[in-house]
Length: 139
Image (cartoon, rainbow, N blue to C red):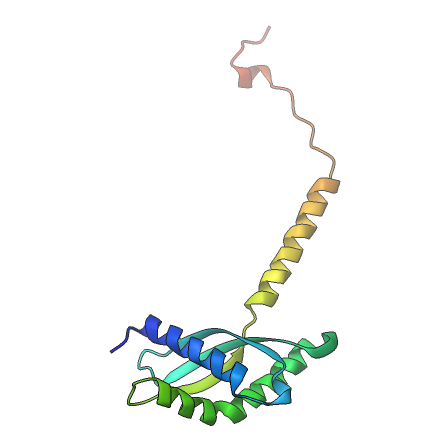
């Protein structure tokens, strides 16, 4: 029996190839499978994907269309996985948009704004040392 990480990698590779070469649904768009995570009992595979909307369209709408298209193709993809993997039970496929890219871009924007604010702020003047802090007696 394969380790879960190895099986996830195999399912990821096979699904990526199957979607790219076998599926002909115009609602899929430019799709990338980013990760596959199996439940502990290997009965469900959570498949994460990113998709570029055509002509800079709405990302949320494209995610919804792609998720529905992948849902329609889930039976076909599962059958193809069964033919290629040597398993008694092939996991059920569930598809989710991967938001890590958007989250990373959002954090990058926040950090850039903080850096601009820091650069625009005048430098804080250094306070002169008090005689007590320097360890010198008062005169």
